[in-house]
Image (cartoon, rainbow, N blue to C red):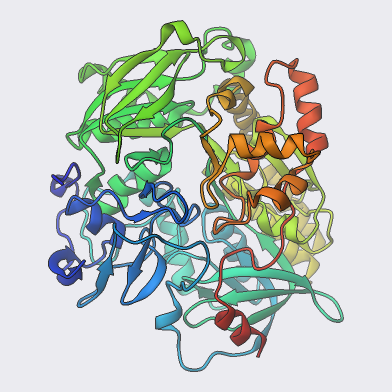
Length: 594
């Protein structure tokens, strides 16, 4: 198949050294720092695997290790995530003609584990997640003298927002965000009281004997367990999925996936793009595609916007000049390129046999319901879906922290006090994992939690703590106001979830369709967990991260008045979470219990 993806050399001064590896028995060349997913796209491979039950083609979707759709076989090990696995000399990769199993043999880090790992390490504070919130929290506490361990699943700190290019890449025209985070990266390198475990999964969290909390880890050099007096959970967020006919086809990606491929991997994952979503991110992604030489057929903004713009909106946006300027530049780039921008429109289906060949789009009515008499078909080989983000609450739910439904902050979020502590004393939640608000808000929340932990552990006097937290509050209020405004403008309406048809998969991992869910309802399964038990929806590799929100909304009547819809959504709750919250092999679990 002819490649529709291309490396973007103008954005990268120099890639890493050439790496020779075998792909389905044939030698290919990649570059140090690239992921297996980037290599596959660059050589024209859009189908990474076949779904285990239907045999349908699957490919890259989220590009952040959440969805597990990009599973391939590496050096004989099945079910390895291509998006988080770096290429290396002599690697053997098999894709495309094998059906990947749900679960089974899998480990991106297993072949690189050290021969000796500590059983349990005692520590004062563990921070989970090295994005904007986690880095701030860890550094503030460590610089006050707290012994801190920072755990992150990525190879380098930064999270999604401050994602760093691979060390082997040389980039002179770095993204503005890297400059914003440079002080954080430098402080991490030189902190005397901070230890970082990268490429490490936290797969379980439990109350510790005698107090504190036990975190179960899986990583190349990390101990099997950490026993912490305090926890700060900065687990971030992932793209909000919307199910529609064809959304599992190769060529359908999230907005976050497209942005990461362009910015940190230097590759355009297609040629002709339709972008459908809501909010500023898709404008920035569309502009990035244009600047990289791709053709953007259309940008579809789900919100009509005009009915929501008022004095409160202006007040909330006032002072957010860098963000407004970023959006303005993106719009100018799109206008210069002649890219059509449609407000109050969305995709309704992706069409194609083995990959995207066209996209159906339609105008939306009130409540975001697609108007069938307005459907058009646009020729494209790629569809970028970007409808905001969902907080990653797996750990706060596993720990049984109290949660509440806040639609404008992404859905279910942990209940917290004004210092970011959850309903469990000693457990804090900060950043987008506690409610969508962006990097600036995340950093402020991280600082607030770090300051409070330092005080609780007697490293910071109460007077100093109060002075520091009081100084943060005006900025926090301003950022909360801005986050609420964005949520009010761009949170998708319930009608968008009606795009799925009876044969549309709601659970991508277990291939559970909307029809399967409806059938379960006729058998008196009315709660999320009853349907999960009967259909296996939410039991796959992603552990319900992709399908959980979709499953709950598929059970509701989208025509309900907004207040009643929200009330029923809240009464429905969320899927139960059990360890391990990431798929591990039985061998890996047995080793951690030794």
